[in-house]
Amino acid sequence: MKQKKIYLDYAATTPLALEVLREMLPYLKKDFGNPSSIHTLGQIAQEGLDKARERVANFLNCSISEIFFTGSATEANNLAIFGLIKSSQKRGVKPHIITTQIEHHAVLEPCKELKKQGVEITYLEVNKEGLVKISALEKAIKENTVLVSIIYANNEIGTIQPIVEIGKLLQITNSKLKTKIYFHTDAVQAVNYLDCDVEKLGVDLLTLSAHKIYGPKGVGALYIKQGSPISPLIYGGGHESGLRSGTENVAGIAGLGKAIEEIEKSKKDIKRIEKLRNKLIDNILKNIPKAKLNGSREHRLANNVNVSIPGAEGESMVIALDQKGIAVSTGSACSSRSLKPSHVLLALGLLPKEAHGSLRFSLGKYTQEEDINKVLAVLPKIVQRLRKISPFK
Image (cartoon, rainbow, N blue to C red):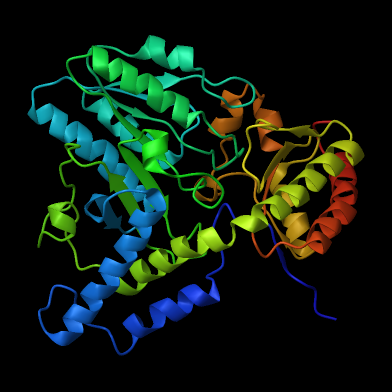
């Protein structure tokens, strides 16, 4: 009998939803025109872009002119950070960026590169639950601070940051300063589960990704509040209002638009996913000695479970679960091939060997209770076996 495959790695990527595929197919077949062309096929493609832009804008509660499509969320993060700093440097400002120790690499690496170029970077610490202190952010602000970039919900531990409170703090600060501090959030993991109304959040820049919301890979979007000074990183034909040159991936963008529209319909499923998440957390902590939850229990994404299991190596558990037909990860998919311990878990205060013994389960709209029951049936036995042969007893 063929073994059922159980997918619990939705934070890495999501399966393409059927309704999204249907939206994309016309632009891959008969409506294949270049949206920059003025003939009928080109105009049909342009209408596809306009429709997707309107759907994203409606979801974020912003103007369609504030939505810019990119080739990925990584590119969108790079455009937000490098684009803003490039623009501020043109004005003769020596810029200062505030971010956190637990950002995705798509934020940390641009900051690392900018530091080499003389930009001042402050990395805020987080508490043991992965939360930033508002008071620490306030203390870190300087006269030359131009950008605060803080992830909305962490991709590894699911901790949700107080973005609304941070936005309010920066609005108060901006009213006192002569120059504006811009606020960017990487909302890639948040879009499926949290309110992303940019007016409520108080953000100037927001990043999202199609393939995390049951859309296609290779498509991202950046919200840029009107008036925010962003310089392009890619030059060419002046696409996306001159901020992102290159012929648009019409089918992928149409898929993003449909995927984001479908989120509203599936919001009723969040409570069901959260209930399954709680069942998984409670039973792992109860049935596996010394297992520990990483991140906040209260301020946590509805679909995220990240646990450390002492005495069992993370990748060994992933492989063993995979052999049972269960797909999970040890953390961020972008760094899963790295032998270094998770920078996020180290920032929480975990020892390297504790970080190496971590597992991330991320649930989604196709997750069923029988899937969770299967994990709970096999995981304790896997841990018991691995602990017997572990050098870290």
